[in-house]
Image 1 (cartoon, helix red, strand yellow):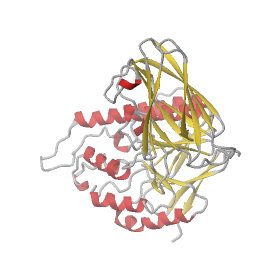
Image 2: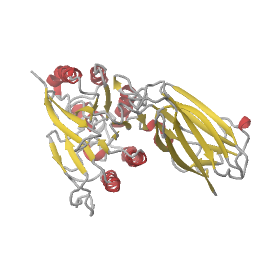
Image 3: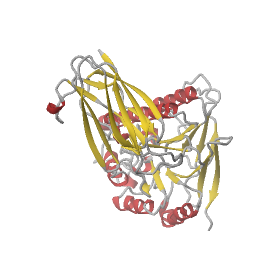
Image 4: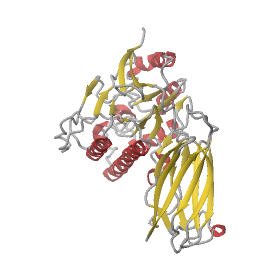
Length: 444
């Protein structure tokens, strides 16, 4: 049996049509068309921007009901559970009778109502996870500019000069935010904590919000002898604890964004993030080179003391691919429901060089959703180090068995292995084309 929970989001933040101030709030209207027979309490939890709360609403089986809660404007990942007990008897260990079939993402704006229908289905999972974040880095109507870098710094010289790249981006008054698409070291140097901390400190020097997605060099490939023969999953844990210690908050200038940590089924993937600006959804997803982590570990070990662990290795790969597919689906769903003019997806791996192993589900999902979306879509990657722009699905893609063209997708690979160049991505929601980009040089 199922019931439909209809959620309306009414922004009440005033008449200002520009970027929403953090203190602006909206009215969240929850309406239940018909309460399932064994349901007496609806629980919604809000968790974000350093604060969390849980709200309970009493229900009468068979009857409709409506409720209202005040929330801040921005991006909202919505989850809800319904219980057979009265609200006074529902506790953190209580098992819900019904849950929504899928966590949904909506965009709360002042002065505007957004309708979202959530179906309650008989519970096949336990727990409530709702996360609220002000996920707007700019207004819907003003141009937005991003600095994109990747595969940097490489080696000791570039590590010593990385500050100049950071300073050059900081000095550009037009740039609103930055993205690093992974590989904060080369593939032949050690993956030590001290190095990670050095790069973290450099990231902290950004005077604008910075989003970062890990590359293969800083965890997947750390099993190599010249990288320190580390356990890759242990290195991934270190990266997450250091660079994503506060899920849903950017590096550099702290700013809330939406993190997949808000989605209970994939909460470990704190590094998958998205935000909205200039009527475009920007999404960062963790997809890495070295066959997306499929490649065996410790092949260079000569001591006979390090061994591959296929069960752990492939379990991580499967979980990360499932999370990536979910995040891509969720990003396009948000863009569609928000009537966005375009979407940008960032990832580390260059998925069009060499074999497709480890990338099939991610790329097919991306291509399918982009085709349905129909509006301009950018795929920005790193990994292969040489600047590239193309349309990988203009006539389909034989390697990925994509038979239908997806002409609205353009791919850009940022120049890597350098501290003297960055890519400026400009978005003009009122102009044509929507996207423009240019390679910027760092003055010597």
